[in-house]
Amino acid sequence: MTAYDDLMAYQRETEALSQVAGRLGWDQETMMPRGAAPQRAEEMAAMESVLHARRVDPRLGDWLAEIEDSALDDVGRANLRHIRRSFERASKVPAQLAARIARVTSEAQGIWAEARAADDFAAFAPTLTEVIALKREEGQALALGGDVYDAMLQDYEPGTTGAEIAGMFGALRPELSELRAAVRAAKAPPKLTGTFDEAAQMKLTRHLAKTFGYDMSMGRVDKAVHPFSSGSGLDVRITTRTNETDPFNCFYSTIHEVGHAAYEQGIDRAYLLTPLGRGVSMGVHESQSRIYENQIGRSRAFTAWLFGEMKKVFGDFGIPDAETFYRVVNRVSDGFIRTEADELQYNLHVLMRFDLERALVAHDLQVQDLEAAWNDRFEADFGFPVDKPSNGVLQDVHWSVGLLGYFPTYSLGNVYAGCLNEAMRAAVPGLDDQLAQRDTSTATAWLRDNVQSHGGLLEPRDVIARATGKPPSESPLLGYLRSKFTEIYEL
Image (tube, rainbow, N blue to C red; front, side, top):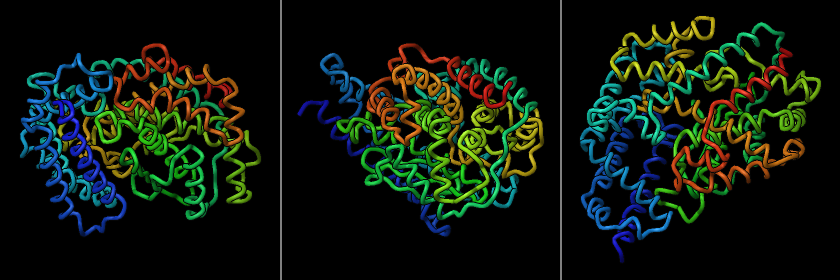
């Protein structure tokens, strides 16, 4: 066997163990009894210790030094790029720190959930302070004197800096705020009212998952407080949630998570349990979930079909026709919750979190001041005050589990989705006729061929540039939103 063969055999075991660790996280969110949380924290820490040891094993350095990149094909060089990046990053983080972060963030997840249920930020603040301190320490080790937040970003969007994201977001915010103000001043479509059986919602949501190509023989749909997708390759699971007065929450959370899952299921099987066998970045991942959810799932064509399906399941639910239903689905409404926000306002939620977490990492904002800072910024951006912590600073799980640098990838994914939608529409004339018949296969096949199948083969921005023929830009997203909401609200 060659050094490359030895390296890849070793890496395959690491990838398999990483999937096991991910399954522990899935179970914690869905099936684990609440009383098991302390033991699960120890289990997660133990798994992280094993994984960290494998990621810094000196043999990796020896193999990497021995292998000639020029002797490999594109797949081999891409595998080497990912393994080298992981080895160099992991080697900078002390094993004890990696295990402590795993233990503390596992415990913090349960503490956050209890504080959220009790609307008590003070009960969570000491734990969050510890999480932020540990993640700062990790970021400092990774940055080696450079920008700590940039170092954190590399776990989620390799090759991107905070300054680049800030520039893109700076271009988004004024136009989004201006369009939002115009929409709020216009006459709004009606609201969906009534109650919708939650068991019936779950039945229809599984139908939706299959409609978007989710392979249920290698996945499952469960319920969780915060919808998410987990796993890759042959075991990719999603969760959703139900609300008897808001079935859209369930349906569009499902379509969103199916976008993530379809990405993982669509990766070339030759990459299974290798560094290329998972999504290349969270921004590209989010581009798939958002284009499934919004540009396809909230389109006039697809909502016409969904309207008919809802009438079959729920009977007459007060919406007279498919056109009105389209406008109801895309109604811009005041709300506190990011995951429930409409397309127009969603990015404003993300931009706020990006600014706050950068300030936390830079020591410009302390945890004890975070709730007040959140409330002030929210009222300035959205025009009404936060009523309680569960609708404000406690609504998202991300900071409790140490995902600093993750939030901006949501809006970066929207930007990527705007670029992909523009290219897909140009490549697939007549797409709306297919969507109106529930046929998403052409759209999902285009995304699979141009984005999903590559897995980690290309760098994140190269994936989008190759699929669209030009570098990523916020312009297609802004044009799409401006056109859509100008028409709906007759601006």
